[in-house]
Length: 170
Image (cartoon, rainbow, N blue to C red; front, side):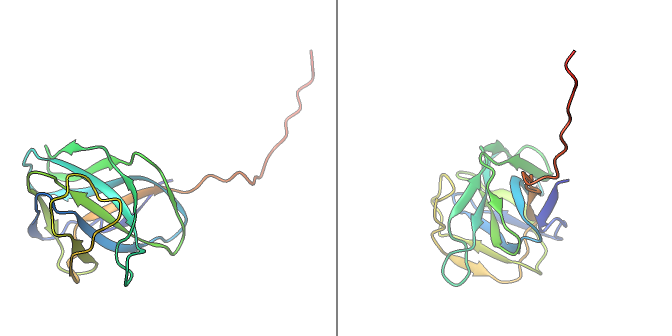
């Protein structure tokens, strides 16, 4: 059964994800091992802009975002509510490991919501057309808590238990 990690609640304060700026929510801590499936961000009003979602590890200096683990294909911001995009790769993130969920609208600002409590919000200086392979650093707002999360499946087990079935030959 899949599970979500991040801020799944809808914040009460309107905000924007500026064009060309990679914004990240988190860090979020894995409650169990999981295989990344998708990421979701809350869109408060559709602007028709193209955007990406992705997931970064938390290996940057001072426990900040580091390496891009996975990204989505681009999507068009055409609806309100949580918009979920599948990841192009499905890395496993282990129990207790921290990660950040990223949103990027390369050319047009998109509208989201903030809770003004909880997780930090990181954003870089801008000019991004794709999610950077290594988070370039930038500004951190403490306790912003954007409405963004990732969805995982538990890893499959190849260790059993197994059942052998022997069928008689006819």
